[in-house]
Figure (tube, rainbow, N blue to C red):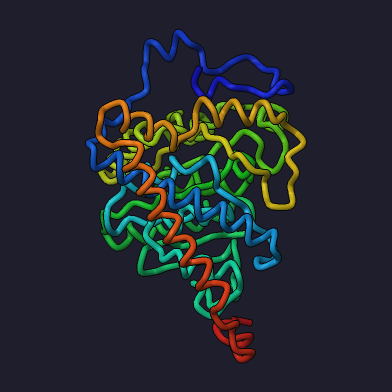
Length: 349
């Protein structure tokens, strides 16, 4: 059973993922080489271990404010990063650490920002939700629900205005999919045929309410149909499926066809934020997803089955990733705090 089929007890609704339709129209899955499988594993492990460490540091009081972890959703951003090319932009909401790491931002700078230190990407003034890297074409990290969508649409407008063939990957969640600014953006993007891929990371619970209890149309891939924007549902727990869908969507946009929507069926293992006990779902449900659909374990299993890596090889990869994360945590713990004069730097009134 695919992750898209797994539902909580309170999600009582007709199953929109009909088995017959899936059989007639199987979702494409990219065939990864050994190097691609290993790279996907490294990147997803980096995000997983980084987020686990961030959760520990939050519990120790080293990280303040809001902190939204990406554990469980790693395949979405890693697969899309594998599909995009240099010059393409990425923008997302506030569950953003994974996106930063996937696009190559320095883990030390990301962790330092979480702890409010001088070496952070926003010089310690932005925190978890507000980081940015022009060098990596990462445009945030936005704390307002749905804010990434009009800004990402604006980036796509700039691409077209400048006659660039770059595409903007605009991420937002299932909860943000009900925001009015999303549909204003859809309308403009299709009207002007802007090169933007709207990626809905449907982790099924938004802040804490099941999609079937909050959305009249639960098939979020259809949200653009009234604007003539095509949409595709994707197994967001399989990095190969994400890569295949990303390749197709980005090619569509780059060819001048306008926007498209990818609904990534994914799942977060932790609460909405570090302050969320996630009592709206059962432990059994979470354990089932982790056991049967974990994106990292899927790659590990394929590598072992094809004799592309041994258990010892995989342990070494995990160990090297943990060393990177530990170094980032050490840097973030001992880096200096911003000078008080920074309170007035880069602040516009």
